[in-house]
Each structure stands twice: as C-alpha cells, then as structure tokens.
Image (cartoon, rainbow, N blue to C red; front, top):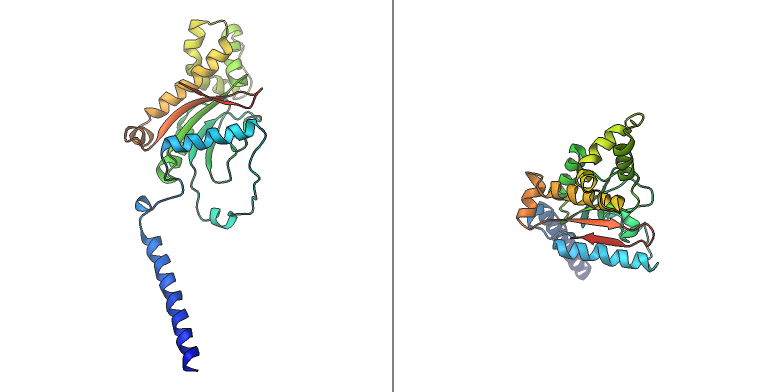
Amino acid sequence: MAEAQSGWNLNRRRLLQGALAATALAAVPRAIRAMPNSIAPSAALQRLMDGNARYMRDQIDLKDFTAGRAARALAQYPIAAILGCADARVAPEFIFDRDPGELFVCRVAGNYMNVDILASLEYGVAVLGAPLVMVLGHTNCGAVKAVLQYEKDRKPLPGHLQMMLDAVSPGVAEAIRQGPADQLNHAIEANVRYNAQRLRQAHPVIAKAVEEKRVEVVSAIYELATGQVRLLQ
C-alpha cells in the first residue's frame, strides 16, 4: 500500500512539474522563443524553390490535412508572406508545395501593393514572424494586359475595374515608355519589381526588418505554361 502511495505521489509530482514547465514556456516572450519559422530568409526561399521543383516534377508531398489541425487552431508560423495575383491559375500553396499555415498570402489582380495589402504584409512580418516577403507575378497577366490595352485605346472599363488599372499603371509605366518588342512580359516583370521595391522601402515595419536583415523581399514570376517560379534579379 505504501509502495502504491509512493508511486502515485511520484506520478503526481511529475505531472505538476510538466504543467509548471508548460506554464513557464508560455510565459516566455515570443521574441526570445525559437518559433518554427525562426529561419533565415535564404532558408525560407530555398524551401519555396524546392517545393516548386517538386511541383514541376509532379512529385508533390502527400499531405494529411487533418494532421496538425489542432495546433494550427492555436497559432500560425508562416515561412513567407506572399503578394500574388488573384488569377485562379496561380495558387501559391500548390506551386510551392507547402502545408497549411506555411504561407501568408495576399492576392489581388495585378499583384500591386496598396494600404490594405501593406497592412496585411506588415502583420505577416511583425506579428507572425515571416522571414521572407515575395511579390509573385505571372506570365500572361490579365491585369497588366488591360493596362497596356487601355494605354492604346483609352476606353474606360466598367465598375471599379478602372481603379485596378490605376493601381497597376505605375508599375508598368516605364515598360510602356520604353516600348520593347516583348512589351507584355517586360511590363509584367517591371510591375513585380516596382512593388517589391515599394515594400523594401515601406516604413516603419518592413523597411526596418529588411535593414536589420531579418526579412528579405524578393521578386518572382510564375510561368503558367511550365509551372516554374523564376526569381528576378
């Protein structure tokens, strides 16, 4: 009987110690705890590109979407915040072969930055700790094509579509002035670079994180025909 009582006391002590340890961990500020996304920007980018390589080979990892659901209900730790186009053919979670909770994605036709998008990306960086921000455009972008067409015929678009053109236009203005032979692709890349640069200079949150080398902002193009994500220099 004494032996059983001793064993029960020992188990209770261990249980209490475990509970105290969990409580102590929860009390540690997030900034000094190692989070799952506490990785270098270069490591985050490599994970994305490795996933895209699997996607191109049609060898994506099998996923159990129920696994980790309870943990994800409590927190998210994205390795990248992505500003992408709303185009239905461009789904970052698929083309980078990432699990739920790994990408913090903001999508709008023409992948341009406005105040709402900026605030969301700041949340991804400052609150969720994403070490990488990617502006992801894609080939044959309808929003950029619409801007180029508007520059030719000046026919206004219905509803609020004109507001989209006005938001995308600054990113392609230089490409329009230069008038290269392959104007569409040149304009698509110019728009991506333009918005990436705006993000690098977006004070106080993202610009500071970039200056401190905690975050990197990169530009990329998704090739619709091949599935490849191509980084821009």
